[in-house]
Amino acid sequence: MSEPASILMVAVVGHTNAGKTSLMRTLSRDAGFGAVSPSPATTTDVESVKLLASGRAVAEFRDTPGLEDPIGLLEFIDGLRTDRRDDGPSLIERFLGRSEAEGPFTGEAKALRQARIADIVLYVLDARDPVLPRHTDELELLARCGRPVLPVMNFVVDEGSRTEEWRDALARLGLHATATFDTVVYDATDEQRLFEAMAVLASDHREALDLLTEDRRRMRERSITRASRAIADLLVDTASYVQPVAPSGAGSSEAVEDAETRLQEALRTHEALAHRAILAAFGFEDEDPEKVMLECTEGRLGIDLFSREALREAGLGAMAGAAGGAAGGAAIDLAVGGLSLGAAALIGAVLGGTLGSSATQGRRWIRRAQGANDLRAGDVVLRLMLARGVDLIGALTSRGHAHLESVRIRGRDLDPGFVKEVLAELGRARSNPSWSGVGRSPTNHAARGRQVQRVARRIRVHLEALVDEGG
Ligand SMILES: Nc1nc2c(ncn2[C@@H]2O[C@H](COP(=O)(O)OP(=O)(O)OP(=O)(O)O)[C@@H](O)[C@H]2O)c(=O)[nH]1
Ligand SMILES: [Mg+2]
Image (cartoon, rainbow, N blue to C red; front, side, top):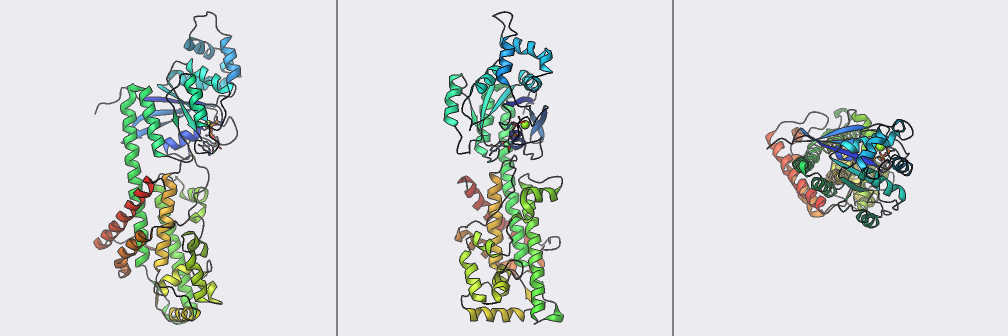
């Protein structure tokens, strides 16, 4: 493969607050790039980022300060005309040489300077705005820079977005190649089309853009594979984990409760680690993981694993109800109440994975639990973990790096056939406590590895179908 002649230079330009810095974040997969805020004039200097394909920089994107007074600037530049044959670039150059470019129009000058030297200019616009004179003046200023301009309609997922109106207005200005984007709700197809449109306008750099597209496609596959593997590891570790009841207290309800608390805590922590691995698989890790967890995911991604709410959100609401009924009286809290005895752990595991509906049966289970030596997570826990993991991945596949809100996960209502298959796969893990990596490094058993691979493969196939459906 031949080296591209030079790196593709892209200037990202547009009205203040149109989402230029956000676009930079999402395209570079760097949530920490620049400063993003709803107030205008956030970016005051040019800042650039290089995009890599197979480890090699193929394009450099430059973020610029927002254009704040395009109408005033266009008037000013028109006033610099000394000959009616002055063309756009010579007028822009004349402006850039003037003191006003360091004074009232300093932000605009920084942006236009980049537009003058770029191979392509991305004109980012807020598609929720009506087409206003300030926009047409901005486009006129950019046209005068003499470089290809590709309008990028941003905020297109927003209900108020006026994409068609914009397309018509841009066509009237002779801009027929356009792209749509939403920096917050990421869409891989929009990104691909953006690169394709850029390749048409900056055809000398088609190879770089094709490399970038291909690299992004592979990255996405890798993310899904790594994330599927993280869920599979979590499930195998959890299915094989055994929490002993302290021998001294065997048979006492305190000893069982203590073991339950430890089981829950160990599994919560293990789930949080898996979620962190999933975030990392999609490039949402940060140099400071604690910060990401706090800012991006609110600690443990919202609802506690061992709560009625978690069951309900996973479409297992009936089970939460049944569990309450089954355990009855004071045991309701014990069986399903938040942080005490988790519905999932108790019902699924201690009680052998079956749910009854009568209070008598519930009490019998509790008595059996009290006589237990070992506690394990039950199928309900595994189902929840699976549902929550799949939901997290679903959320991340359509999350732009410009998203400012926390990731929230809900347990998805998963296809029962898929859940059944995964649970069946986990059967062997159940009888191999030594496989578990809960609270320690995962073991290297070849059989464990094969099991993880099989579970991961099933999850990946399911996820790929979900992502294809746009789910
Ligand atoms: N919902 C939604 N919000 C967006 C999108 N793009 C940007 N935003 C928000 O819009 C605001 C402005 O985004 P910035 O990326 O700072 O805009 P900018 O064009 O760089 O602004 P300046 O640097 O001030 O010129 C921020 O609050 C972003 O979170 C989008 O596609 N969808
Ligand atoms: Mg900005």
